[in-house]
Length: 336
Image (spheres, one colour):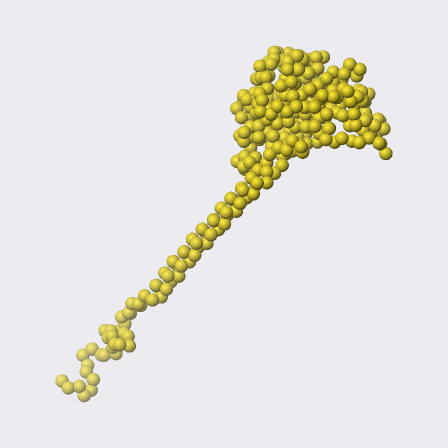
């Protein structure tokens, strides 16, 4: 029995505490599956993670005028991935030689992107920014190709324009991280960086809309975050209605049902359903009554007499036909 309390909340919030590090380190070393670099990253003293909490800046704008290098080595502005119609942007600050957490974040992002119906390049864009000064366009290109190779959804041929991997400007990466409330720290003793496990969803104009923490979030959280960030322009009309019923719970890191709103909408739909049922019943009843009246009127209408063999006389008992008489002959005893 390992005598270390495992802090799930700290991992979900993206803070590698000493208890998390000790637990994961002990398990992976015992199994013999953890590489030395990952051991170095996990074996962090509490002082190295002090002050590393992510500070959410929801509603604030990201600095879109910052410049970086794209995978081709060209200078581009961060804002070139924004303001493309209705598309929100998934933004992650990572470093590619990270032995553990960054690959987990990106692998899980790829898995969730394959699971949702929104498509990169059509419904949203993705931007990865490395804050490691040792990484440049070559590493960025390798990361771009690796991610897209595992992206299983049908996508535009020019998807690389919608999946940008930026590098080469560590100072600007630091400015971006500060604007997002994302701290990271270089650890000289291990040569690695201490940082949180989180990525960001921004609106098309660069407003910070949502923080998604950890590596075990459901695909539905990503889908709902994109829907929210796009201000309801991504997805069907039904999904836009659903967004009224859900809100993001920072404590659970997921979208939860907004009970009062759900009850109001459910009540309205129920009232509309009852109203439609009663309206149909009234229409059916009126039609039935009209048919009944028409049937009674048809039965009560007098029958037209049928002439057969002579004139018809009418008595109080109804219409009767006179007996046939031979023409030109008179009955016996009839006076002439």
